[in-house]
Length: 168
Image (cartoon, rainbow, N blue to C red; front, side, top):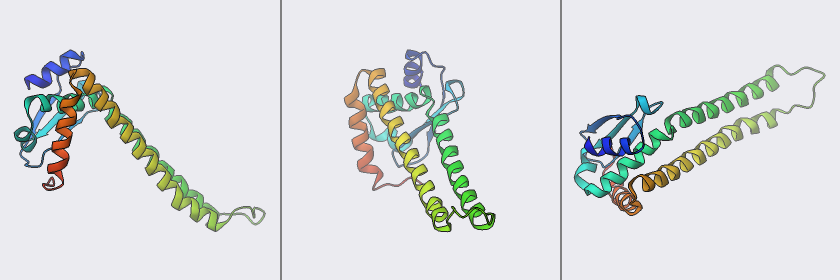
């Protein structure tokens, strides 16, 4: 709690709710539509595995997600992906079922291709946004703590253990 309070205050952020999950898999996450309605959670496994320095880097990374409003951005991205899929469905079915006799430009194969490609493209866009938000959170955490190697060390440890100890 003290570490989160210090990091949040250093960024001029309100103190988020802090949770510890009874879980052996090392993990942490943050959520909230804005900094006033945020929560940060870490697992027992993470607390046991990391040094204080590494934990500070991970918590700064999670607070960066809150400060950068990544939950909101990813929600909009997911809605955009869903909308693209629905538009592809509507285009396919309007071409197959509702085409007029005079309009012979449409093709059921084109509609089917759009139905397949639109969700794939939307997912690729969503993944690219997600990856860029992670890189931004990493950079923000390094700036917050002044210790980028602490986060890098923590991420190496987490990656090594997470493959062997999946989260339940």
